[in-house]
Image 1 (tube, rainbow, N blue to C red):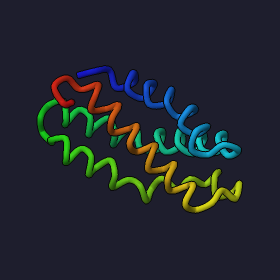
Image 2 (image 1 turned 120 degrees about the vertical axis):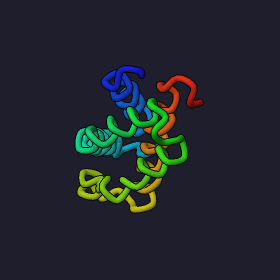
Image 3 (image 1 turned 180 degrees about the vertical axis):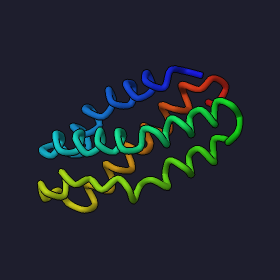
Image 4 (image 1 turned 30 degrees about the horizontal axis):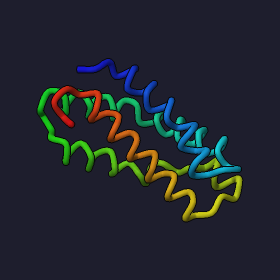
Length: 111
């Protein structure tokens, strides 16, 4: 399996540009929220990536598990900065897409 810490680094490297594109003036808060979510979910994400690599779960199950965490991604800094609800939800969806795509790409034979 690919190094999980490298997967996290790859995800984090994509968050800044993603926040700039999706959030404009709220980019700093968006990146902060996304990184906080990654930190809070690190143990679960690592477990699911390992299960995916071991063929204990398939891509659909992995995607479902990751997306089931959307409610936990509260995006508090964006809410405090008064970013619009639609804007926050679109960014959160983009973050989850990056997480899923990056993890699937890192696990050999999954893309």
